[in-house]
Image (tube, rainbow, N blue to C red):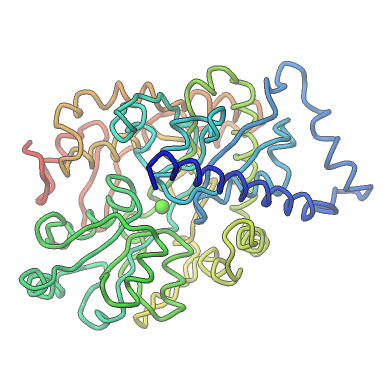
Length: 454
Ligand code: CA
């Protein structure tokens, strides 16, 4: 099939899939959620919230199409839709479109909703910057995008095939180094992620390099879709996988693999995925953008109440979203991880956070975090070294923390929850390495394994 026909059939599939998801949603939302103080929930939830919006905040459009990948990072989008938080701020027609892969999401935002694609959605970092620069688009077309909020911290990990149980592969790799060397001369240790040069690629690279394993020379790293990776781990042709919940937990539950490390162990309170949209959509619909953000913020606060997480797991695991048993999500949501190698974690501070984590705001998009993702791309030679000088200007163009702040103020978020600096300050990793966003070159100098000379 030609590329063009492939795209058409994929888009047709996405349209069909979301249309049926919408139908399920309509059925599911009747009689839910109950309105405080009783009354007729069905008629109130449909009409009342929109009536409360003052004319100066009323969105320019009620319609938007947002892409998501069925992993816990997408929870704020799904919860905002299912709990009526988008509708509360006037966005009554938000269509959530499940993306077959990160490549599809990239292709779909490139054509926009007018062409049958999407206006924005969930992204690994720094995809919005790379799309803006035309570095990962077709024909290197520049599609300006805005980063509007961070969706989540934690919730990711590095899974290893069960055949490597008991060989010392864990957060610290010192005792497993000889295994990697030994494999290198026959069949190199092979690991997968779902899209190159972004979070999951960067997490596995950071972890390997901290353990003295050169991710380019000592192992084989590949981009492979999640479901195929799981199948490959089962048959023994894949050794490791860097990915988000529910995949790590599924691997352990099905006894295919174990967890060497959670990303929460590699970098506590680390930024994970983001919400970003096409800049032309945001510029055309500034009030609708803020309405969407307010809905996401409310969902993030709701998700951070651990008492709501059982319900969240039920909503997310439904057939039209993740389509899996709810208990696969419920335990990690409480910070409970069976690592599959005898290690058990039961620590709420290791769970995914959506609104606030141990270091401050989750939702606010810190520019200092954008910088780390770009610097890591420079570290591994994905971006030329001159991006060290260009990164800040690119971040200032793409990161719209100013819109986040406006939306937060309009939503009545307390001042204490609105960061006053675009930098979260110095970050520290599990190996003791520190990233000072004011001195990115010093960070690169401090790293033993890298592809850039500084
Ligand atoms: Ca992720």
